[in-house]
Length: 82
Image (cartoon, rainbow, N blue to C red; front, side, top):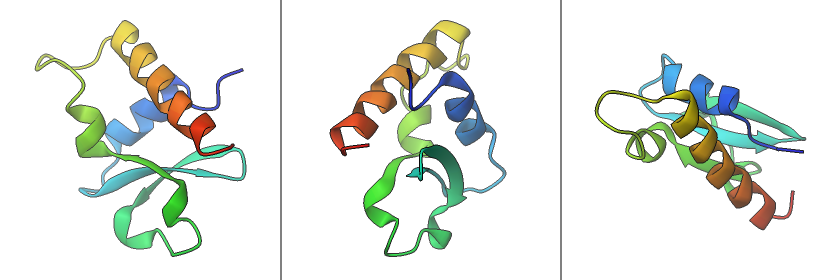
């Protein structure tokens, strides 16, 4: 079972916040502005929107690329011990 799915990635990319970050909190992926990530959750930040967006071609994400990035992010969450 995936901890991070393509919908999480899409939410991050579509966030209205310039400094959007993907945070894994209590079993859920949450998109928050970087300024709202408190010290207790700073270690649970998976990636920023800029880091994730850089992994897609210029013409934007496809279902296949969203799935691939979600898998990479899922591996990061698992490495954190989730």
